[in-house]
Image (cartoon, rainbow, N blue to C red; front, side, top):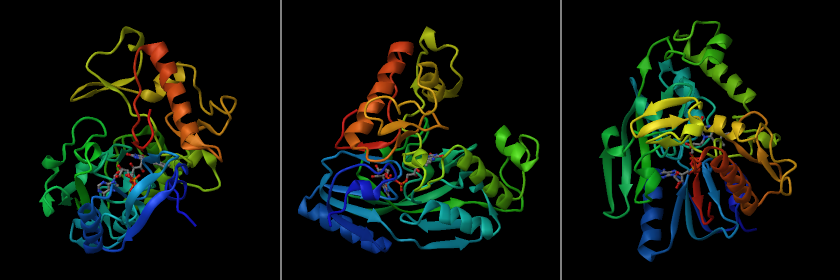
Length: 337
Ligand SMILES: Cc1cc2nc3c(=O)[nH]c(=O)nc-3n(C[C@H](O)[C@H](O)[C@H](O)COP(=O)(O)OP(=O)(O)OC[C@H]3O[C@@H](n4cnc5c(N)ncnc54)[C@H](O)[C@@H]3O)c2cc1C
């Protein structure tokens, strides 16, 4: 039976995969990528498919799914292969007595996916704990060790990996802390769950539990029985603008190195798209999550065309109300927005 991207991605849409190979080790990944590049075949490298939407036409080429799952803990340094499931790593390091990534618990996807959009949640960014990355340069054919400064982090959810398929992440090393205290908890709802003050700390294992409970409430933990979680997480990225239009001056915002980062969920809600919006729109196969305004969700049987039509409808509604264009946070392949 032909594998489709609906089988491989958390949004569960997308057409057939030309040829699928699962890399079972880092050398195997390099071999598969080198072979595909040598034949000139189009190549798509993926991890857990949790930030990827592929068109209904699929991908007429090679797909390498990073599947190797080795990791090594050396004191406070943790190195994990790109294909390792991110949350399995978080669970392992918390159990080992390390602190630093417990607030990133419950995020789907692979270790290799984390630097791609500098994954972040509840006050921690990948770049906060990143020591180095092993990268395969497809143009030069070389394997290199990169420091965080080389990765192009800075503006919200950006990196050099996000804008080019030249560099493949092979493994990632994180610098954590061997301590019984978590990172400071800056989110009021999580602090409340832990019964601590905002800015306080707790045992990393307790923080992990609280974060997962909080994410479950927000439908941000994958659950095959719950359509609110059939998504890519946030479909839309918080817009960063050099100048905020007058109509959007009330929008909650934060400074960003490229200007002002606006709260896309607020813009969507204020443009008239409340939680769960969409069930009565179009053919009802795509709607906003009932708990998370940025999450476009597949209600079952959606196609990529349905997803893109719905996303464009939200984008256009926000543009009409605020004169701001929302862009996708996820990676779109063979589909237009
Ligand atoms: C329910 C849900 C909740 C989420 N919550 C969050 C959140 O709180 N914070 C957050 O930041 N994100 C969140 N996300 C988004 C997503 O989980 C992350 O972006 C994740 O890191 C993507 O990893 P992946 O392995 O699934 O990448 P994929 O979806 O497989 O790929 C995404 C992109 O990364 C590229 N890529 C993947 N692996 C590599 C590699 N080894 N080398 C080079 N490029 C690679 C792919 O080519 C593609 O362009 C959420 C998603 C879902 C579904």
